[in-house]
Length: 116
Length: 119
Image (cartoon, rainbow over all chains, first blue to last red; front, side, top):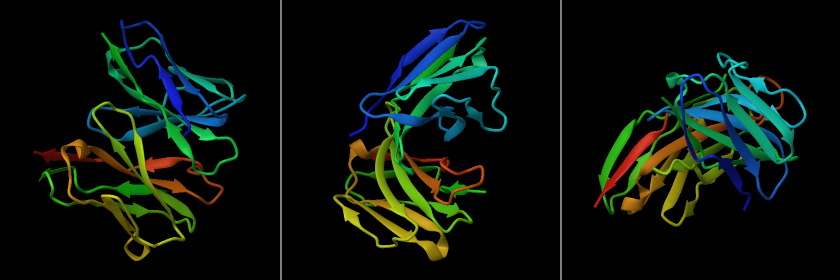
């Protein structure tokens, strides 16, 4: 089956620093990747849709200058949390959609970010 | 707008009991897909089942079964003879199938139901 990886799986950073999270589709090409954020005991909230070679589309209320998304290739999208603050601490999950597919999305294992 | 509601926040059962997780959805689309995902403590989302809006046939797959009722916009999921390993958060999700609109291509998740199976 299709595999999506995320790196790192867990990261702790200091307030004010930036952290980059990678999402890779390992055995398929993904023209579209999605980034979700999940607070403890809460649902997944879509942050942005990332299309290869173009700018990401952000959901309402998500600061695009704070959450920089780059989808430079058909197998890699990155989310950079800039000038992180403790309130950015969360579980970030990406998903990748098969090129040409309608609904097939494969989820990464998630990245737990803790900002101290 | 699309919406998914999982009214049960937490469910606690004893092993071997059957448990049904409720899901009610709202959409104006005629074509859509419904999903159930499991999220164990590790955090990774595990795909369980998918139905499209044109197929109301209910099926059983091992210990899992689902009941899709378009008339009531419900997509309930049942685990038979629950096991401790079934303990997880379960999410119902809706995918907009009709092109156009801001929700196209996106999954809308319900709030999740925390299932705890006690030995």
